[in-house]
Image 1: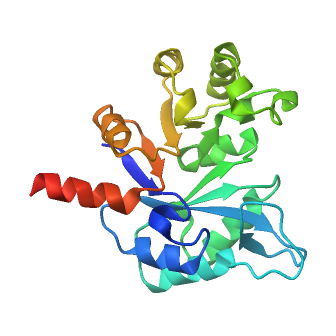
Image 2: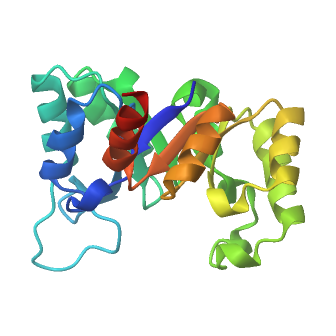
Image 3: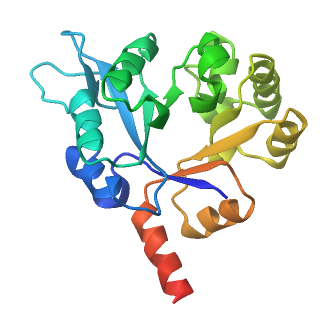
Length: 222
């Protein structure tokens, strides 16, 4: 059975907002919410996708954790790290609110954390590539590059590979099976595609159409 993750800003809600967090925190059909994490000049973890701007207000990750803890919500929080070196800070904050078992890390996660946190890391496939390729558009990553990255991450004891669904070719899927890897696909916004991946038992599907998909399934079931 696949996990379903609500991408930040899913279903028209504001990206990285408390409105988004609150809406999905009590939806039983949703496995996780995804938020983008950076650190500001005050060494506070905040939610934002792009480089932080001066004088801007951003939701603090601590406020998200405090809300989830206060609501006693079982929702998992996928912290997509947009900068290097944030792993320990996220871990410390999650421990403070007794939420670490509900936290998943993706994004710029160093491979060394797989030793202890393997079950909570959705390891981005680019983390298995040479640094020179990181700035390239994903369309320029040839299939051979993807397969080599899978092999490297498997040797580093990765469990789940986080990959754009457009790169999830038959060859990538087969290589993953050979290496006993699972896949987390992002960002799947076609409702038919979500259903297809669920039938394939893909480990995790991240989408901006979370609630729309759940409502459609409800109509079909009815």
